[in-house]
Image (cartoon, rainbow, N blue to C red; front, side, top):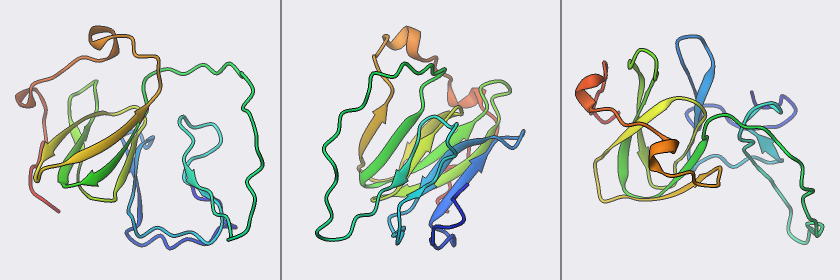
Length: 159
C-alpha cells in the first residue's frame, strides 16, 4: 500500500492486518518508522487516510482551511496511539466472531482499525490516545459488545 517512490524500511515497522477475504482491516505502525519523504500508509479510497508528512527545517506549511466537502462513511475507523504501557490487540470478524490477529502493542505504537471488531488485553498500566470519526451517536447506536467466551481464537500471549 505504501507508494513505491517513497523510501521506508518495511521490516517490522508497518504491518497490514487482513481479514479472511484479504481486506486490510488494520494497520500497525511502530515508532521506529521514520520516512525520508511524505508517506501515506493507506490508498486514496480508504477511510481513514493516514500517513507521515515530512518537512525539512525551515519549511513552511501553508496556512489553509479544509473545504466543507461532504463525505460518506460507514462504520467507525479508529486510530489509537499507545502513549504508555503495553496491551494485546485482538482483531476479529464481527460475522463469525473469529479472531484473526492478536498483536502486542507498546508505547509509541499506532494502530488504525478500519472495519474489524477489536478488543484489548491490558498487560501494563496503559494510556491511549484514541481518534475516531464523530459525532458520537451514543453507546447503544455506536457499537455492540461481545463476551470473550463468544470469540474463537483469543490469544493473550505476548508476541
